[in-house]
Length: 315
Image (cartoon, rainbow, N blue to C red; front, side):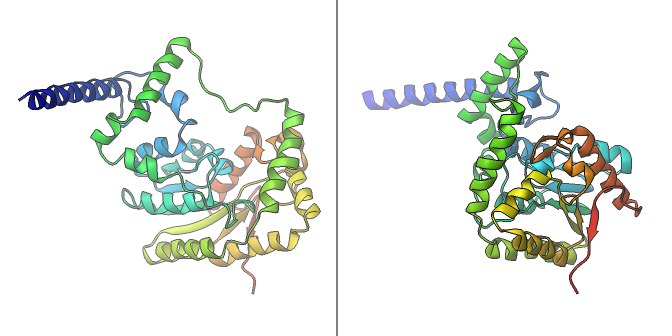
């Protein structure tokens, strides 16, 4: 019958298209489902900053680190390979640019499906410790990486495959440079980004309860759990004072210290008053980031911190 022949042709066509799509994605493999890839095309340079979640899910799956870091761009800014050299422990940075409090919690529970690390470090800043910072972009990357079929036949992966080839051919790669000069961007971050976030701040009672669940799980399963408060320039703190949020900021740090050991890098220190040590008010430049890494290595070795303060729980 004609309709049966039509369905047969449609099935053959669909199979052919899926096969071509899958074959193309297998060859390019933009997020490295298979490591090493068939072809080295600078996949990380093309795709890591285009989808932190998808990249980190697949990268974490293939590594069994002793120490895992979670957080947003301020934690992602830390080069944990430096820590590996300093401590001899395998490390993985599971932080996301633009990451949220909720995504950090989701990433932690997801990671346990693959590996149980010896130490978990949550990087948390005041504006991240916010009930309104609860968006969760983790679900779609999780679905894409469910198995090889869902990954290799995914249209988004195919679009990134095309972009990966184009970037490799032209030798041009995505950057996150702001579309304005440094001074203008610095002020924009303070007057627009920071003010927008803090004026919509809501104390995270619900997310805090989930955070305590993470700490409890780690304690029950022999995983060392701790926080770091990444450094911010003191101009950020001037904005906190302007918005009369100092008491809430103090409460935030006390809350972390009551849950787990907390190293505070966001305090009044000459390095945090030096604009030249920062890319913008939120993100240290490499030399200051390396001071943070050095201090983390000192903590792991039980040495005195050269930068940062270990917060004491309130009595």
